[in-house]
Length: 195
Image (tube, rainbow, N blue to C red; front, side, top):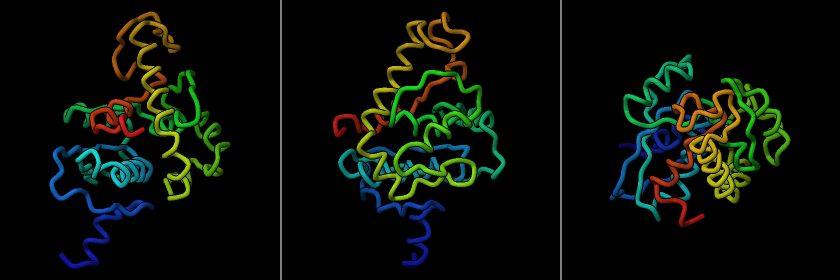
């Protein structure tokens, strides 16, 4: 493959350039995402930071159309066995704090809260890239996001969640609002010991 093709493949249409994954990664993870930029940038950030230590590679096929809605992504993800909260931006906010108000599939509140955080001014509908500067703000807070997301899951499992179905322990993944399954992905990748 020509050097130019290798460079383009590593960029994946994101603002972070993917470093080459380990030659013999023990595990390969496939990511399905609704967004065209944010999720891919974030997963590129994780792969660049941890893939060698944890021996994994993340493949993020871009087979979806640009108008893929969250429920279509969830439907596709369930066929391949993984699901996080429909709002990936909520996961980004969990790097800065715990927020337990239901989102009902909307990002407005999360975008407002996130835009007040360092490096995220203007983050929202028109600017959702995880730039190097934003990645530099997120990486030191990865453990905080992990702990916050896991805490929300545990609250829901015990019937102490904040969504209207709150007393229903172990409600389905799509009913858990707010929540993020990204902590499970980090755990599967073997990242927590490095946080």
